Every structure is written in structure tokens, then in C-alpha cells.
Length: 313
Image 1 (cartoon, one colour):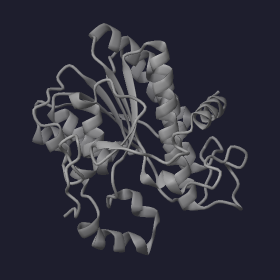
Image 2 (cartoon, rainbow, N blue to C red; image 1 turned 120 degrees about the horizontal axis):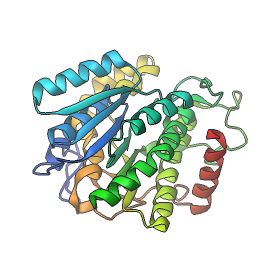
Image 3 (cartoon, one colour; image 1 turned 120 degrees about the vertical axis):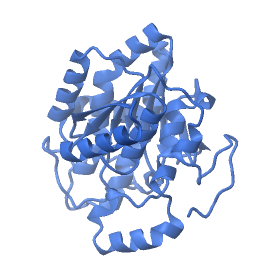
Image 4 (tube, rainbow, N blue to C red; image 1 turned 45 degrees about the vertical axis):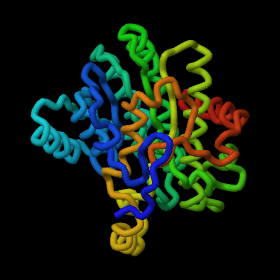
């Protein structure tokens, strides 16, 4: 049960489901990559896109879990076109391997849903020696987008259909470190806060989408890039929170969104004609929303872009 149901200008609200916001939309002929598609809103996003006729590639870290989700989708939707490919966003090597295999397949790419993430983890460095939440939530997706963008541009040109990149952020971006992005202290264990680090990574998701939107417009590419807050949902993201996980699951049915509602804004941005041509914006509850002033800082977005490019070299 979601308590606040007032519809916004889009005609949808926080209680709208992914199925509802895509009703009547034909996604046939489109190809999408959805990261983190083996559970939570990622698996629901993959299911709904497949339901609307989209050819879906699920980027998953756990191939066994991905296989189960794929089988469930195909059982429900026999005509679904769904594939699974291994993808660990915390590893730049894994991201490069995924992108290389996808590109080698010569498949088109219309939609990229950067959904995978971890939340409020204890301090840990990735395989590339980068703080885990920043590495997984931002940098892996930054590299993935960078490696696939030419394929998306080519697809948009050849099909004359707008490409769309969707970054799943969070309202937690408002609670990043005081300085926003800790460029000089990214791996500082002593000053680490699991929630501020999560906020930092989610702030990075918005800044990435905004700078990407600016660059795509400058290039004249028919591709949009937007970010969103899915709502507070009781998913596997709570797995690192100990006793709070049980409280969240119990209280969540009354205060939080369910998974079909949580996936709705991702699916709305991926498929709905209302957002055609809209780029560099932040959405929540299937409507335009206003992020923090720091998230709208163009100098910060450019600085993060350059910083991220250096990290992936």
C-alpha cells in the first residue's frame, strides 16, 4: 500500500505500476540492456520491457539468479525475447568484457537502463581499488555507457528512433558528503560513512546523466539521458543493514513502494512518448522532479566526468 497517490502532470503517481505507465505502448523492434536485472526493480523492469515487445538483455552478476528470472519471464510471456549476460558492475574488467561481447554480437541498442547498485555497504574497495559503492553504482555504469554509446548512436541513426539512457539514482543523493564528491578522499576509510558514500554514488548518477545529456545534445545525437528516484522499496538493497532489514520489510508494506511501483519510473522513462526529447532531467514518481542544487551543478558534473574518465583509463 502506498500512501500518497495524487497524480502529477504526467497522469501518473507514486502508486502507478510499471505495467500501468507502459499500457498500450509497443516496444517491438527495440533492444534494451537492463543492469541488475536478477532481482528487485531490475527484474521487474526487464519483465515489463519484455511484455511490451522489447528485446531485453539482462546484465547480471549472479547468472543462476538471472536464469531463474529469465525462465519466469518466458513462462509468463512465451513470446518474450530475453537473454542473460554476466556483468559485475564493481569490476571494470567485467564491464569491458560484457561491452565487448555485446558489441561483437552486432546487436542494436536503443535503451540502456543503468539500474544495478549496492546500498550502505561497510567500507570495502573494489577489485580496481575504488570504494565499492562509487565503483558499483557510478563508475561501472559510467564505463558501460562510455563503451556502448557509439552502438547507441549508430542504432538511433539507422532506425530513426530515439535512444534513451536511464540512470537509477535516489533521493539519497541529497545526503552525500558535505563536499558532494570526495575527489581527493574517495578511498578514505577513516572518514567513511556508509550512507554518505551511498549518497555520493547516487549524486554521481545524476551528474553523469546531466553531463551525458549535454554532450549528446552537442553531438546532435538522437539519444536522451535522464536520472530518477525510484522511491523507497524493500528490495535486496537492504541486505547490508542487519536488524533494520527486518524492520524495513515489516513496516515497508505500509510506507514503502512495492516492486511494480518502484520500477515504474524506469519503465516510464524508457518507453513513454511523453518524455520524447526530454534530456538531462530528474524524475520521481513518473513525473519531473527537482534534484538538489549540487546535482544541478554543471561545473561539478564536468569535473566528475573528467575524474571518471581518468579512473577508467
